[in-house]
Amino acid sequence: MGTADTLRAVETVWRIESARLIAGLARLTRDLSLAEELAQEALEAALRQWPSDGVPRNPGAWLMAAGKRRAIDGFRRSRIIDEKHRALAGEADPVDASVEDGIVEAIDDDIGDELLALIFTACHPVLSTEARVALTLKLIGGLSTGEIASAFLTSEPTIAQRIVRAKRTLAGADVRYEVRRGAERDARLSSVLEVLYLIFSEGYAPATEDAWTRPALCEEAMRLARILAGLAPNDAEVHGLLALMELQASRLPTRIGRDGSPVLLLDQDRARWDRVLIQHGLKALAVAERLRSPAGPYTLQASIAACHARALTPEATEWEEIAARYDDLYRAMPSPVIDLNRAVAKAMAFGPAVGLALVDGILADGALDGYHLAYSVRADFLSKLGRAGEARDSWLKGAALARSDRERTLMEERAATLA
Amino acid sequence: MRVMVIMKASAETEAGVMPSERLLTEMTAFNEELVKAGLLLAGEGLHPSSKGARVKFEGTKTSVLNGPFAETKELIAGFWLLQVKSMDEAIEWIRRVPNTDGAHHEIEIRRVFDAEDFGEALTPELREREEAMRAQGGDYGQERG
Image (cartoon, rainbow over all chains, first blue to last red; front, side, top):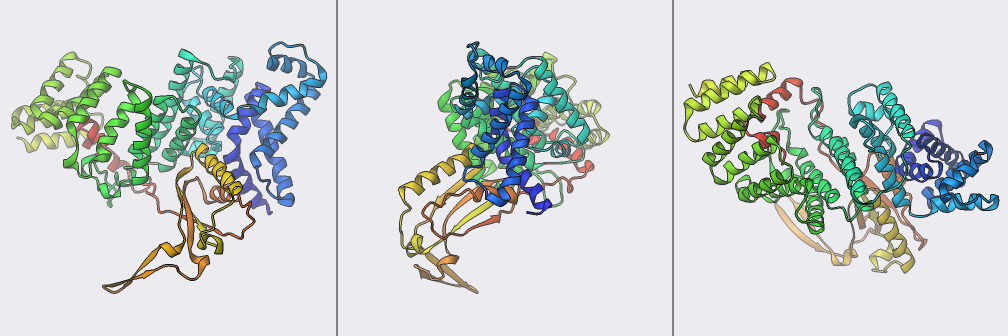
C-alpha cells in the first residue's frame, strides 16, 4: 500500500470505526482525550499490519482489542491501574490478577450503550452549543477538524481549539460516561436532538451568506440520527426528529431553480422530491407517533412536513390537518413564530380572514411587533381580502423593519404595486 | 452521497439456489451493521432472471423478451442503496460483505446522482432575494414545515 492509499485507508476506517472505538475506550480510561489517542494508535497499528495480513473479518473487534491492549499497557506503566480498577469495579478491592479481566469485561458488554454515552457526553450541557456540534461531528461523525471547519465556514485552528477546550471542560466537570435514567436522561437527550437538528439546519438553510444548501451536512445529521434511533429505539422524539429531517431533506433537490434562484415549497417540482427519504421519514414518523401520545415538538413538526410530502400536488395539501398540527405544536411549544406559521396554515385552510384575525392578535400581544415578516404575512392576507390600502401600509411597515436593503426594496416594490 | 451496490448474479443465484443458513445469518448481521451505522437506505435480493423480463426499445417500437437471460455475470442478484461519505467508505464496507459459501461473486459499486450542492450557484444576492421572498408566507416562505 502506498502512502497516499494508506492515508485514505486510515481516513475511511477511522470514519467507520472511530465512534465505537472511542466510546469503549472512554469508559475504560475515563478520559476522552486519552481514549481518542488510544483509538488512533489502534488504527495506526491496523494500518501497519493489515496491508500484509489482510483486513480481518471484523475490523471493529480487532481495533477494540488493540486499543484495550494499549490502554492496559498504559495503565501498567503509569501505575494508576488500581485507581482505575477501583473506579471501574465500584470500590472493590483491587486484586492484581483480576485487574485486567475486570477492565476487559468492562468494555466487553454493551457497546451500544457506550456509544450512546459518548453521544450524551459530546452533547453535555456544560458545553456551549458550538462546542457540542464540533465535538459530536468529530467524535461520533468521525469528521476531521478540517472537514468540520469547512462545513461551518470557519478556520481549522478555530475548530481544533474549540474541541480541545471542550474536552478540557468535560474533564474538569468530571463528566461520567454513562447513560442516565429518568428526567436527566430526557434532558440530555433533548440536548443531543438539538445538536443534531442544528447540524441538519446548517446544511439545509445555512446561517452564513455564502452558501445555500450543504447536503453533506444534512446527510451526516441524518446518519447520526439513524444511529441514535438504533441506540434509543424507545425514545419517540428521536424518531420524530429523524422523520422531520428526512422529510425536509426529501425536498432538497427542488429548493433551487435552474437559474439558481430559490423555489418556495408550493412551487417546487414534487416529482423530484426524494421518494426514498419520504418513505423513511413517514416510517420514522409512524414509530414516533406509536411510541408517544401526545406527540412531542419534533414529531409534530414532522407530521406537518408529512402532510406536504403526502400531497402529490400543492392543491392536494391537507391544510386543515396542518392547521390542527400547528395547534398541537403551539400548545407543546408556545412561541410567537410558531403562532405566526399557524396563522399562515389557518389562512390556507380557512381563508385569509381567519389568518388576519390571528396575526392581528399576535401583533397585539407585542411579541412580534418588531418582526418584519409578521407585517408581510399580514399584508399578504389583506391583499387577498382586497383591502389594498391596508395591505400597502403593512408592506411599508414591514419594509421599515427589514434587516437588509434588498429586503426593504422588495417589500417597497410590493407596496407600490398596490398603490 | 449515495451509492448503489450491485450484487452480480452467479450460476447459483440464477439457479435459484438459496444461501446456506450460515451465510444468511452473517448477511443479516452485516445488514444490521449497515443499519446501526445509519447507512442503509434500501436493499433487496432479486429472483433469478428466469422470472424476469426485458423490454427492448427500437425507435418507437417495443418488444418483450422473457427471462432467463444469458451472460450471467452481467445480471443482478441483489442491491443495496447506501448513504456514504465517499466511494472509499462504500468500498470499505463492501469488503466486509460475508461470503462464507466460498462462491465467486462480484459486487459493483456505482454512484447515484445526487442533489448537488448548490453552494456555488447561489450568490449572496440571490440569497437575499430569497430572504425577502420569505416575507410572503412565514414558514411556507422559508420552505420549512
